[in-house]
Amino acid sequence: MTEDPSPGQPIPPQVPRVWAVGGGKGGVGKSVVATNLGVAVARLGLRCVLVDADLGGANLHTMLGVSAKKGLASIFNHESASLNDILIPTGIANLHLVSGAQALLDMANPKHAQKLKLLRQLFAIDADIILIDLSAGSSFNVIDFFNAAHDPIMVVAPTPTSIENAYHFLNAALHRRFMQAVAKAEVTELAKKALADKNANGLHSPRELLRYLCHEHPDAGSAIGSMMAGVRPKLIVNQVRREEDMHLGDQIAYACHDFYGVKLEYLGGLRSDDRVVSSILDRKPLQATQPACQFSTVIEGIAMRLINRDREAQHG
Amino acid sequence: MDESYEILGLAPGAERSEVKRAYQRRKELYSRGSLAIYSLASESDRESRLEQVESAYQRILSFMHLHGDEGEHTNSDHSPSAPMPDPEMAPGEYLRWARNQAGLSIRQLADRTKISTMRLDDIESERIDHLPPPVYLRGFVYEFARSLGLVNAFQLSEFYLRRVASGLDD
Image (cartoon, rainbow over all chains, first blue to last red; front, top):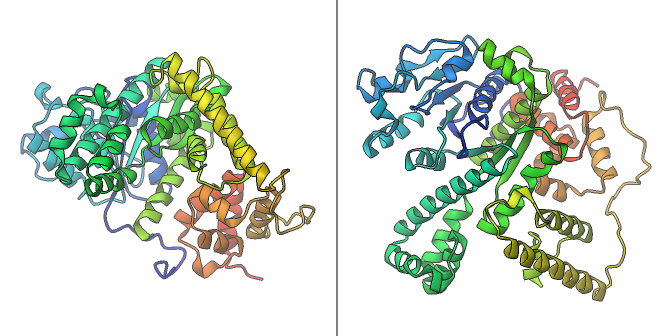
């Protein structure tokens, strides 16, 4: 392992790694998880920037107890040229915030070009980890950020409503990624035709469509297949109240394998904890005030796993 | 036969203990009222998948029977009764001991943790020059310990870092 000249000095990755937290349903704790993950990363000694991409309902600044004078809005307004100019210190070493607050109403739906520009800028922030908190829902604006991230993370709660939305979200994300791969392999017409009479062909999922394409056009099929094999969504189950739901994440991973042919990685379960609610009222993340409590140690474990995955992915 | 393994989410040729575990997991996944497949599978879809799982498992079992793979056995290369090393003084050795207690090879643990076999071996052998910087090492040790089901995973990563910081001065 020649890339490690000396243990003791963390080696900054060449480019920031981007994590995106999404998952479809509102109220499952995406922002709480994102904020505390960010604090955990910073406490582990890596420079982290939290990005509040929930332009319609930004509140990471509130969870961190800072005021958001400048945010993503000033990028869209051309008041600020670079995300590096609008980083807000959080009072926690190594942790900065790009706020989504003060966005005008029409900014929740940025134009395609604006979105691409923002994505480019996100990958150019001077930090080790960029952690994007996405808004609820499965619109393209959310999904494109989710798909662009190195580590797309879904947060679900153990309720049928959350599970239902999470599968809808994942299906939408996979479908979008799939159609982009189809376009790249230049078999859009074939795929469209197959989907148009999908009932006749029995195509109900990207997995079945891929099987069909592999049969009809093996070269394109295998190109798309290998692009899709690289999709490794991650999962956190939040607000767990029943002990049996601590295994729900594993089961969702098996279900994703069986239904979507996707290797979803379950990162861990977070038990419902009143201290989390208090921490929001206090506007101080639990990870910063009580790093030794169970919620915080699980979050820290997840942060460590993701950091190491990224490292393996970069260095092979 | 490969298809039967695939239905249980396994690579062909998986070991008996893995097959059994995978079968139990899928049985749970496709049980009535399973939350994890809510909105994914209709009741009849659920039932037919459960049947598929059941027959895949039976096919694999009879395949194993034909090939003379009978009872359960561990592939530990160390005696299970080896004395426990001190986790504070020799965390690497302790991890190797715990892995052998669990009856897992380095390869199996690598599959489980997604950490390379070389890295796992470096950690067990405390090859300090080969280890990554502490910020990453902490996570590797934690992951290693956690995947073995050790409850002291956090403490162990602390022990390990302390040991590395002291430069293994012995």
